[in-house]
Length: 252
Image (cartoon, rainbow, N blue to C red; front, side, top):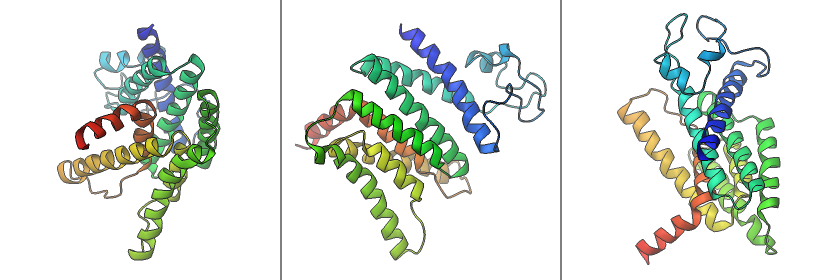
C-alpha cells in the first residue's frame, strides 16, 4: 500500500514538473509529449519514468547529453513522500485526497514562484477552492472566530510586514502574491497552527537564504517566499500539535 502511494506520487510529481515548467515558458501544459529543453528531441516513454529514468540516464539527455535539472527527481520524490503523508496521517481517504490536491497545487505555485518570482491568480483560485473543500471534509468547529484566526495570523502578519517595509524602507519586502497565498493557507488552521506555519516559513526561508547568499554565493539576492509558505503550511497541517507540544516541553 505504501509503495503504491509513493509510486503514484512520483507519477504525479512528474506531471507537476511539466505543468510548472510549461507555465513558466508560456506553453500549454496539455500540448504534446515532453521534449528536451536543449535539443528539442521528443522524450521516449522509457526515458520518462519517474526517478528511474533519471538514474539510468545518469542525469543526462539520451540524445544531446546535456545535464537534466535535478528539480525533476527532487519533485518526484517529494510528491511521493507527500502522498505517503496524506495516506498515513489523514483521518479519512477523502481528507487525504484533498490534502494531496492542496499540496500538489502548492508545489506548482512554489516551483513557478522560485523561478519567476510570480504567483498566478488562477493557481490561487484553484488553491482556495481545494482548501475550502479540505476544511469542509475535515470538519469545521462552531467557533467561527477560531476558524478564521489562522487566516488573520498567517496572512495578517505578512500583510503587516509588507506594509511596514513599504512605509519605512520604501521597497517591497513581501509580494502581494505571498500575502494572498498566506491568507488562503491560513484557512487550513486555527491561530496556533498558523503560528507554527509562520514560524517554519521564516526559519526555512532564513536557512535557504543563508545557504544561497553566503555559501553558494548566488548573485540573485531576492528570495521567493511562496515556497516557504507552502513548506510551513504542509508541515503545520500534519504536525502542528506535535510541534507545539515540543515547544511547550522545552520552554515551560
